[in-house]
Length: 369
Ligand SMILES: *Cc1c(COP(=O)(O)O)cnc(C)c1O
Image 1 (cartoon, rainbow, N blue to C red):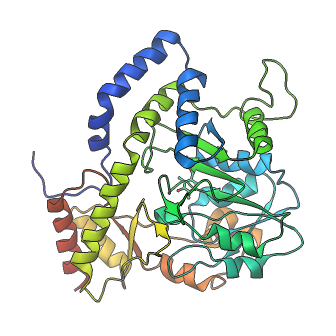
Image 2 (cartoon, helix red, strand yellow):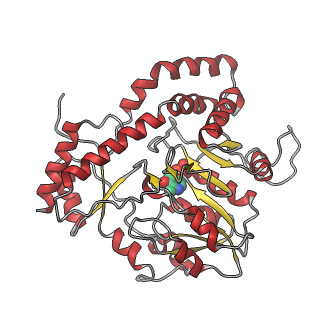
Image 3 (cartoon, rainbow, N blue to C red):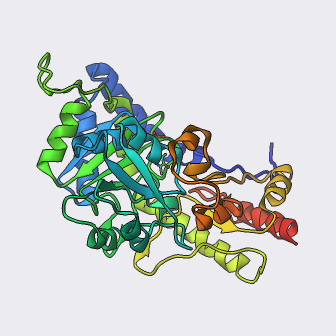
């Protein structure tokens, strides 16, 4: 039944393009009963490492585990401070808390990204790591952050929203000492369930993650450290390999949609468009505008059948889970807080047609008028 509705996300377009390849791959996995890690996972790890231009990719259970394992591999734990942006998905801060370290929040820039100057101010003798987030698919300035921290501070990228993004010619996920990513179905490179990955050039960090993800050892029944169980499934690896081959093309489609939003909304004074740096190839995991009276605009668009989102309604320090951790009172991170009240994510994904986009723009212009 044809409808005028535009969903926030539709993964069917991507699925149709990989369905045959995925079915073949699933048969290989099922025939070999290689469900956990195995040859398909190893093949994906190699392909993604090559794509990023890093020595190692380790497939893990999900993006949150990828962050935890990267932190643990780097030796971050009790008593350590880790600097991260106040505006991010909860998992970034959650991972820091899960390893027993203290999240130290910093405000974000007008482009929503963590800034090196803010990191410099937040440094203390207890700082052991910085966790820049490539929020919405735009790459944070990891090089500048590296420039303001000492060599004893580990830089861990949260690359969950930035598969395929590039800054200064280098892939997101290859810029820090180690990086974590998520292959949650809705990410730019998404599996058919939970999955994640850790990438690094360091043999030492890769070996540590390889053991930690597999009960603390790589040889059966040899457990050298207390690890966990967080491994990539063969079936998910099949999906990821098939989608990786199309990732650049799909990210290009996202950029085309973004350019068209800019064209159609450029003259609408009530809509602030996302700021993009010249040095970054944005992959638009989200296209995030800012408007006054956001909640009303959200409700009106939702009522008109337009799927819109808010990423994220509350910065980390204002979430219940972190309320008693002393991360900052209301007002501590004014830019992140102001943005949280104004941001609105518009539909953007491969398969979104110009006709659908016109509907989004039409309802948005009506709502902000
Ligand atoms: C999705 C996401 C994560 C967590 O990934 P999961 O696979 O859902 O655990 C972490 N950080 C950011 C910025 C994310 O968007």
